[in-house]
Image (tube, rainbow, N blue to C red; front, side, top):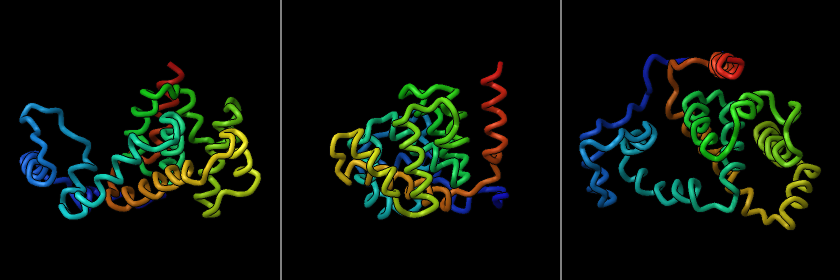
Length: 195
């Protein structure tokens, strides 16, 4: 069972500080009535130099990579499950739904690539994540499926998924909390799914 803290070790900056730093570092005006951003963005700002350095990287991972958005979200959900990263799994459940991932598929992510119902491609993506997580390499048979599906997939296409997985691990280390375990979250998803 993962250790749960009662509060984050690195708390997010206040909204006032967030607005000030967004203006100072990125020349972005954040209106007082703007929706509150994700905690991770406010947490990065605890170290302004790091926030500036990682911004382009984050933007690339989030919007500019070559992996289709739906695939990207499946990869994040699976690595989030492995890392027991409740915050990331919860956030990317929402993002995944926006990309067309169904409630049933989100539930199935928890059971992995061998769960019944995956397309061959989705199972291959999840298997690649599992192999990276457990073996730190994508095994040859999985790599060949990636190459065949994407007609000569260049390593850079999957580097994005690797980078996303590493980022989830970093965020998980940065933001341990007392939120419910993923087993509890899965029970909630399953209960909602069975309604």
